[in-house]
Length: 377
View 1 (cartoon, rainbow, N blue to C red):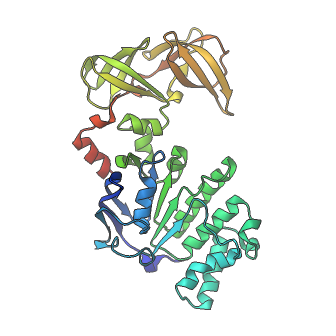
View 2: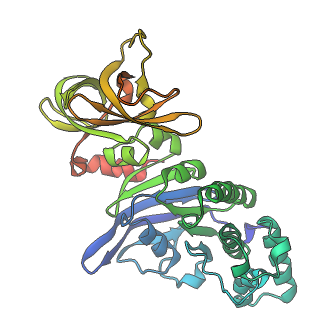
View 3: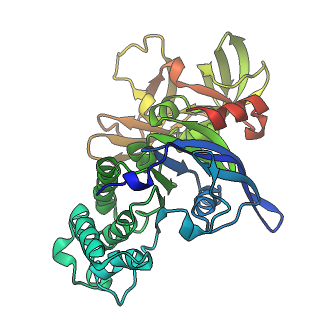
């Protein structure tokens, strides 16, 4: 399947915003998407990610800003004139039409020849491996198969942009993994440009070339999965990137980009990600996998140490998820290779560089930091 007829170089969102009843759902979204990229919009419910997708699709008019493809505005065009494909969360298949007729529907709306429709439908069925199910109705398919039909229906249109709104959220865990692989395979093999909405950070990390993290309608950070995973630029992004341990502490001393922070029975050397002053209350983020359970007699070797009591142990296949509580009552999440005994006291160790210090108030982000968050990548 060739997508060259609708190729473009870049799509640009400039100060895109949307208000509902006087409330900002999306504020000054600035993003340039290169042809062939897979972009994931990531954030909790109500953060503006689906609003952004619907603005792109033309399902919602912009309150302000503009959307351009290779310098030409498309936000003034109706949805059907933008040449975008859409895959919805609930599949949105016609229950009375067979699989092949669902896939053919958009092609028929474009008045293509019968031969061209037949060719594209056959290609679409092969792409999503549903040739044997062509004559079935959607109700006779599994959830994963229905989602494949929805994806095929979008890509046979040979759109210049594919928009996906949480397409895997209705599937069970095994199917989600399978479909993630399938979506990435189709994206790469067809040379698609894809914008994908999700609240699942693992899904976003595995699929996307770049992530856009949103909170309350505002961009928090844009970057590659590796950049956001290793260097989240505020605690909200850190939270979404798996830093489950978020603790409010006080800055006791600062030397360069290293700070000593304490409180809640903790005394830690940490890395300053956002600027702070001695005496400030800050939010400290630690990923569970960075907290190691020291074996008896094992040296901390320059790492921070924390004494805690094991409260719960969960087996998760390759490792154990451990809940522990410090003597002052601070709960911590830890990953361990072997299972500690519930109720036992353990010493946890963490490298100072993996203890990240942020302003506890997200509004403390400077204008410069916000601009950097929006244009990076």
